[in-house]
Length: 440
Ligand code: PMP
Image (cartoon, rainbow, N blue to C red):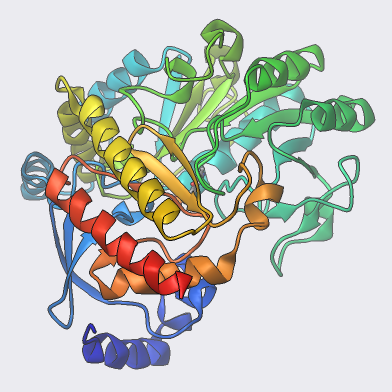
């Protein structure tokens, strides 16, 4: 088995200085039985090397941004160039225009954009703008969708679809949670019920149009059309949180994706506002939001909704983002990610079947999620019912064989352009051994 003394020692030291030893709770191994997380030292292509010298095939991809693989030379060169010219100006730059143009070309609903520093900020800002535009305060969100850690969206469902939210974290006033209504994903009936009860106060319906936060979950046929129609009838805006999904499945967003359930009318699912992040930063911190011109005109300095940022639009993040999208624009990139994802899905499904392990795999192109259960996963409630103990066991068995997954049963696996067929084959063999051990 794998030696990890240095990770263990570093974890002890980290606990002395950094709260919980980690700078984001998702990095701790709390959800998979605890203990020291692996401390990584280097990333190159599809691989990580940890502090003890072990090599891993990486499917975490830093929770999504690293779609080209680690240290892609085109991105690295862009970051170095930016660093040589000064990383932060506090003035506008031409780079920001170039990048805004690229995003708009890929997603026409973005009449106007604004760059920020994280997905959290992007989402938080869309909510402020929607409130400013509509003069209403409440938002409707869907259970299990994660929209960052701002007060406004760290809210769970009350006891039924037509009750107001409860804080999902200490430190969030109940008064703020009461401005949020949470309903099950893929459930238009619950959305209608919530709108019937609270509609006149609802500024926006916020959704991950394809979910990446309780596994990868497709909208059911008609769900996004129904959501947009219901919101519009009610005078509420539609906000898509595309922080995970933008540039994930094709060169564009879910709202421009031809891989949605057949019959989806893209014109009928266009949102008013969109939040972006992750991939568009090429591995550096970034977020962006944008949408209809008249709505975005609410934002300062044009309008009364204040939103700002010292680091926003910094040349390093923008340069990395442009470089990343340039690589993604090359022909065949998404077909390649899809091919790797398909091979991984087929191999994992086969191995699970062979060892009698119940496994539901949700895959959308290069992103997939593995759910230890024998039912479909189409909403958070179903994702919660999957076997967390089995996932924890699988996670550790894979890690010991040099396969790095996210330490949570709700997170996806991401293939990158750096993965090879050989990496996939090695991963499937490791999964076979893991399933065999689990079946004992
Ligand atoms: N929205 C979605 C859909 C996300 O998945 C995330 C992060 N996982 C966020 C928002 C928050 O982004 P960040 O961590 O960059 O603040």
